[in-house]
Length: 541
Ligand code: ADP
Ligand code: MG
Image (cartoon, rainbow, N blue to C red; front, side, top):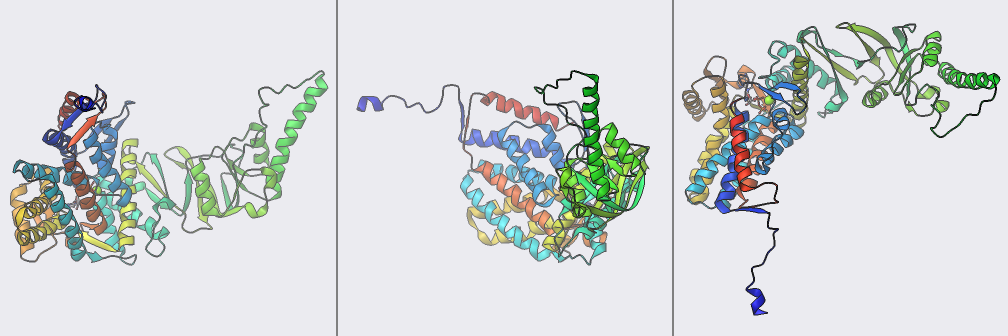
């Protein structure tokens, strides 16, 4: 038995690679920092855009952190954790993805300095954890209230969240559309932004974008003989096809005489006619069908003066149902008058030369659609991304009820106050909290850097102003000075800042705690390092 024990114990397959201790930490940190370095240049209103080409060759031009990270198709496991930070941030609060990622990178960079001073990762993690908790309290203290009454303040929040996107010229307009849309659907401070439908149509300019009271579909009527507009519409929603079913593949129809063919065709026609009669009997004047409508049905519906639209998306059917109060009927034989929904007007309009259908004045006043317009598809897509963020940000601001100054002001204040806490701590924990406090500077510094300003001078100025009690001073990127961000109207939900610090520090701590990377044969130590070089290279694109 003792003999056996002397044999080496093999728990991993031979092909597996193992990286231990400082090597593991270093490689993971390098990968994570590389990712955050790439997107640091996009932070803020003067941040640059990235042009991304996905695996199918489609081009996206964006400044949106999460979009960049998702499209980059990152492979390194630690770098992926940073991408997760951005995704979590996006899901939770809708904004601050770049901030969170950049902060995570900086926290790791500063942690590395501490590791070099032989401070144990556990000590750093403890310090970071404490600092993150204190940061939450500090943010609460510097925040101000916001509610549905403060439309002007909401507009500023909306606009701040959209800054730094390629949508510059139309920002004000889109920002106010966002506020109006959220105020339409809000109920006791809770706004479900999923209720707000977004449609986009390239052509025109961003200023032509509009908030429509109702549902807009990128669809036209199936038959030009149908009316293009119907007042006081009685709306039926069907999710079955208005066509004769193709016979099952193995069904055989035995026809032995011309009479039988005619009888068979008549029977088909009969069925379609019956379906249309059913629609006529309940006096529906508009029909939205999730499936197809065949020629005969189109013709008959047109003759009855019904405006019909086919192949409506499932999500649009649900939206129509909610907006008009109609039930979606799966068997036309069951269609009853009580299944119908209502709208003041259903109308086909030409937008940029294409027909869209507007269902306005719905029985549910909360049904709204934002129709985004813009010169090209790239513009409307980026506008949609910023608008979605703005809607989420507004919902976050309302549900939490607290806002803070942007432009780095909040980060500066958190950094200063954490620094004071650290100095009272003493010992090794002090160093970690100090490192955390200093990491906060990366946000105002990057805002200034990206605007081509002298970051060091501006940061020193802002900090001394904070020390003298001016807690809202941040970086004014357009005129190279510091300003009161509340007065300037650069305002963000407190939740966005809190979540960014929370998720960034969690990711940093998680990466710090890893001292052993065991990889199945696919990733070898060499590949890991090479992968990171590749990412570092991308930083310059
Ligand atoms: P994120 O993905 O983190 O939201 P952004 O590129 O949207 O990244 O930049 C957000 C940062 O830009 C925030 O710190 C915000 O306060 C700041 N910011 C936005 N507008 C302005 C402005 N007009 N002046 C200064 N800073 C601004
Ligand atoms: Mg943003």
